[in-house]
Image (tube, rainbow, N blue to C red; front, top):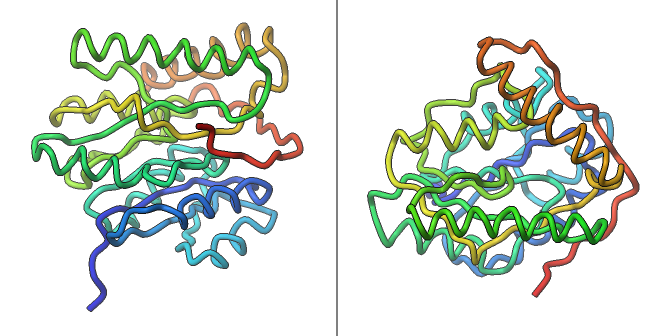
Length: 252
């Protein structure tokens, strides 16, 4: 009988062939000595995403309904691990990323989730400052209140038994803001500021003005709020953006 994995790392993908190799390499190099699986969710890819995933030994499942929440839902339903980790295809991880998550869970059985920040590994300098400032505030709030106010969907680990499902009426934001809200109702969430993921800054390539005045308020906050209040998808997903990929590296 195959040993049940401790972790299931779920990676939703829509045409991520240019980034996925770096992501899977970083997972292959983890120093965690337990059993874990990687699930790549093919969300209507037309490139070689699925082939790359299989070459690295990942389990590929298909989700035909477009949208990141649908993809994460499908991946979590397929997960065999005790703990499911929400990750991304354009993101790499330090060698001790899984080990640190495991330590946090083993330290307290009452912990239902362990979350952390992300760092932009490339892109414009203003984006890197923005990311540091954002998660600096999140860390400050956590230290003062013990409450994880926000987490990146690239870095959310939760006990499978605490999972109540993703709201698939939601688009971007639903896989982090709404999931964090649901997990708070199940128990304690630990925020580990010292265990980041390193993600692509490709979404910042359209410039400061677009990201501050269009992407964040419209495609993220407004869309999340309207769809959640309406209980259905009134506003759709932000348009996909695929600039030429850069090699992502883990920063010291």
